[in-house]
Image 1 (spheres, rainbow, N blue to C red):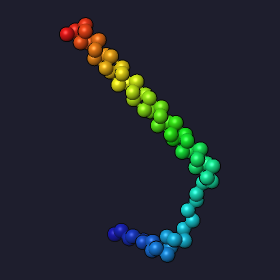
Image 2: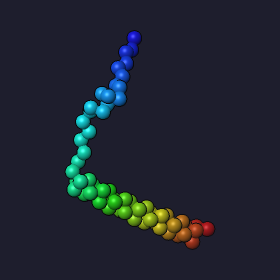
Image 3: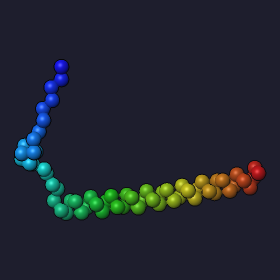
Image 4: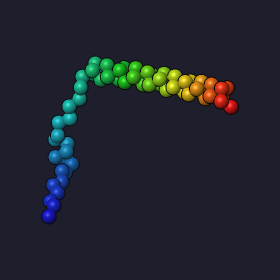
Length: 62
């Protein structure tokens, strides 16, 4: 038989929630933005490569 423990709102409000310093949050957000920009760049490059491959396949095998 399973037993469940429930946390009420009063207990939940007492739990400490660690928040990193603003400087660290800003650094993290900046790094995430940089990574997203690189991901978008790589996605664009992959699309270009796929289009080029398709065009070459059509040219040589169609």
